[in-house]
Length: 160
Image 1 (cartoon, helix red, strand yellow):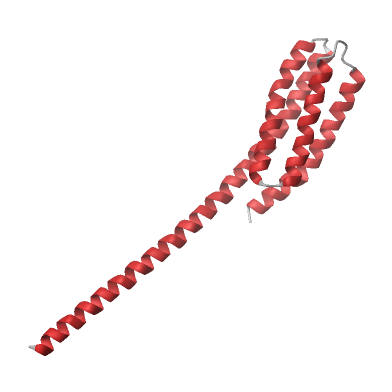
Image 2 (cartoon, helix red, strand yellow; image 1 turned 90 degrees about the vertical axis):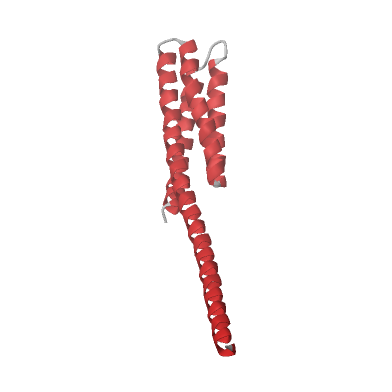
């Protein structure tokens, strides 16, 4: 009888220990998989943010081109109205670059925002200077070209 009881207790302990080990292993594996899934999602989100930033940057140029067209046709009011979406896109791009965490990108986009503001100020003058607006347009394109390498680098690192 003692031997049977001993055998029964021994079997119960082995089953209990096996269940504890299995449960603990499953818990550790679930934690690891969850962390891996979160990292994968973070990389995907970062890639999407970078794409959105690139499109917003192109929206800035498109809006400034529309504004230039309206200005060249003598309609300053429509030029200012056409520039508003570009300004919004520039500020959105700057916010996205801050989320991405690239300080150089943030600084370059800040400079783009400042150029857009200077264009607005020039358009709000009594007699906007065509020469100054042309210079600001050139500066905007130059600043935009400086942003591209940062975008490419950030996108490449988000896909590795």
